[in-house]
Length: 84
Image (cartoon, rainbow, N blue to C red; front, side):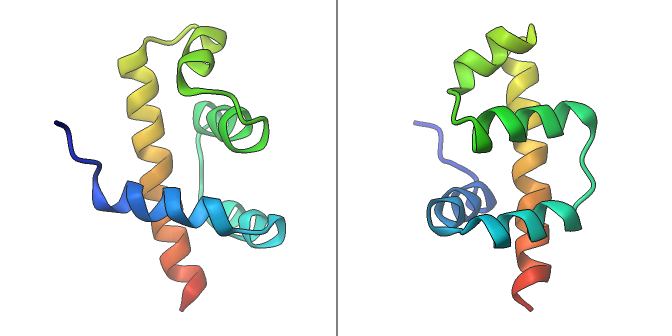
């Protein structure tokens, strides 16, 4: 069994309760690559599944997992700054 990294769990829980205003503030405070921004748009805003995003983007699942992990780390850091 693969354990979810703690920062990913924090981000996942935060996304369940965040309002649009706070989400926009956190997303503006982090610097994302175009691939990461596309992932955020498809996953968070459009609500697409991870598998569907990988298919739509033409990126392998492992490549998409790396993008997802980078996005989670950046959002985690932004959440930490935003809450302080």
